[in-house]
Length: 260
Length: 166
Image 1: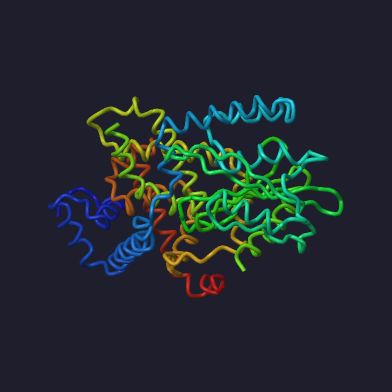
Image 2: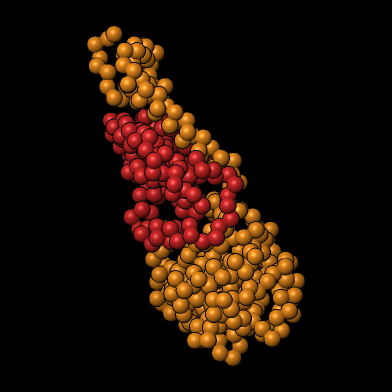
């Protein structure tokens, strides 16, 4: 055995098989007479194996579209530009507070496009007194058939009565240009409670399926948005009238209606 | 643009590391997304011929440090999200959840070292430069992380399993 004392770092490096050949032999003879130390290092090695096994499946998961999108500089810029125009158009409605909060956020963490688009659509139409929707709930079957046709997929207006919200109706909205270049329209359903608070459900089709259905929350100015992806639909539930907890209850109701 | 293609090739590994580091799928992918956006903006700072993977993990480390700083609200939301009806992901078994839970009990700085060395199979020098710390610190954190994990593992049958039942 050489003069160099055996250190904890040597033992760690032994676990990771990162010792030079000669040193390794020294460590092995050191361990030969120390069963407890041997067992400890064997446990470390076993745990490393379990750790790798536990997360290996992640390597085989399909990469979510939003991550690939993050590496496409042009589309990001276009989205930001589109967002900037939307802010200008909405300046009067939302005021500078909203603009400020967006500007402050800067490049740090842009909210998901669907949350932003939904918040813009919500801020635009929910304050309407006379024309909040294009087609009223009294023609619900026509509304749903029309939107399904235009979105190219069977859409449904979930029944949110259990959460205290009644369907007012819905409208067709422009979509953002996708990677294919052509914009698929999006849809918005509007609901109102007895107290007069409103929520809107924004939905988009053709979202790459990611098996990702957890709720996420974003805030755009005074509009709170819960959004999620289910199969090829992206949903976003927005409100400026109720708090996050109440909105979550409505989002839950919508989710269970859409996934009976 | 060739570099971007190389970055794309590393996405699965960045996701794996992020999942183990953050513990929750969406938050992990948020971290990866922010990392990719930042990497894209800073790609001109990457020195050609040096290890792109190490550079990406350095970027992720920096992004994560910033996220942790301004992220209280997210943590609360993630806890909420877990109670919502979420379709079961078939690829995450009980062992993965156990492992995730135990990892979350390690101090984040120890967790990072352990994951870079074990999951990413980085040399101690690579891990040190990715995290911007001396090798000696890598070694001591690695040792402490392993001891803590061992203690958690050995305590598992008594306390841990019961909480996982769903």
